[in-house]
Picture 1 (cartoon, rainbow, N blue to C red):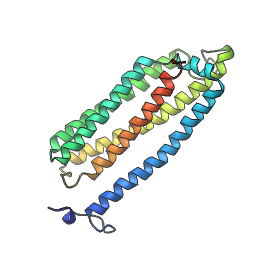
Picture 2 (cartoon, rainbow, N blue to C red):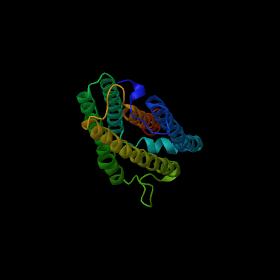
Picture 3 (tube, rainbow, N blue to C red):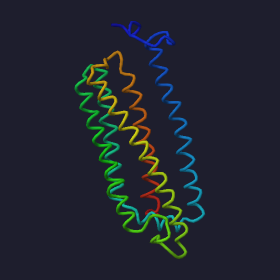
Picture 4 (cartoon, rainbow, N blue to C red):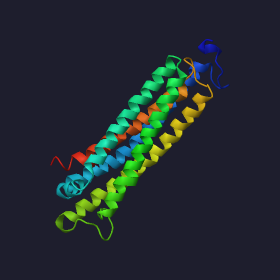
Length: 216
């Protein structure tokens, strides 16, 4: 079966046109996401410029080990998903499903470590920027603002992670129904772009949360 004979929507000239439109649409969506997260990250950097000592004091209270483990987990998940994409391009649907299951498990592990363990440690140490915030004195204002950015950005990233898990689960279901072939795997590629973007955002947040303050 050639690409021109594959089924496609009436608004497209052929399946290749439909696939290209889907990929372009995801890139356009990710461009809006760059603007969204970019505004948060630039605001974070700007505020840190005016109170670096306070931000450093906050960063030094973060859980570096958990953050590093989670970074390795996400990078591994992207590698595994990319392998799954290569497998379906070669016609190996079984390996695609296995790679997606591993990716889903790694993503879920990230959420458990972040929101189940790390958040628990943060709240137990009174690092939520409320009335009983742990860091006081001259550094308290900057540290409090650091944790405002920390909780807002990681919560938003977590929401995107949950969306990614839903999408990877959707790919698993479709693959189990034998809907993908070497000639048609556009949804796999589109979800891969989204998953990789979420990982890139985390890499930037990892540096801002765990590394910058400790290196100052």
